[in-house]
Amino acid sequence: MNGETEETGDNVEFERTVTWRNKLAREFQYHLDKSAPHLLRRWLVTLGLAMVYTLRVYYLRGFHVISYGLATYVLNLLMGFLSPKVDPDLEGVDGLPSPGRESDEYKPFERRLPEFRLWYSITKAFIVSLILTFVSVLDVPVFWPILSSYWVFLFVLTMKRQIVHMIKYKYNPFSKAKQQYHGKKSFPGSNSRTRNVSAHQE
Image 1 (cartoon, rainbow, N blue to C red):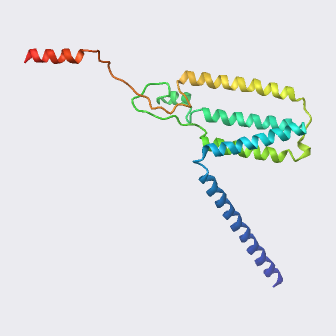
Image 2 (tube, rainbow, N blue to C red):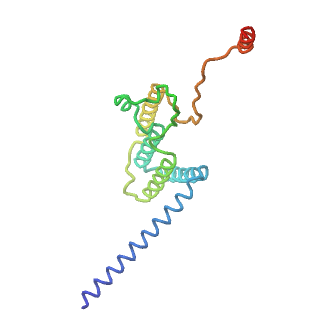
């Protein structure tokens, strides 16, 4: 009897924990969805977190490996934000129209990583990195100028490749204007001459 009572009590406690966790997840998702329209406020919060992290690392004079990993992760997210959802190289293989080809139908630029997911991932990365700076074991001594130089080289190489890709397929990830296609241009006075010819024919 005592064993069954303890097992029942454990099940009740487990169900309460699962219910509390699901409720917390729903509340978090609700506030996260509610913050979606407030773009400026969201990025200001992220900027504040970035400043706090930078000041802490500068004050501690350490955690360079974590900072390098954070910067590389943010660079990877940025490349996803600037890249199209479907790779034009794969589209060209399948015979589908790529962004560089002319089309009568306007198709807006679809990012591989939307802005909201970019913001959420960067913010979460800064929070995790900030927490990791409180773990002294992770403060691995390294020669930070080498890491910085390598990251700058990686940034330049990655951005160069991305810019070449944008020029090759003629797309602009920051353009929101709808493309307009114009017909033949009419010259001044052409309409009046047409009307005069029609009048003489009558």
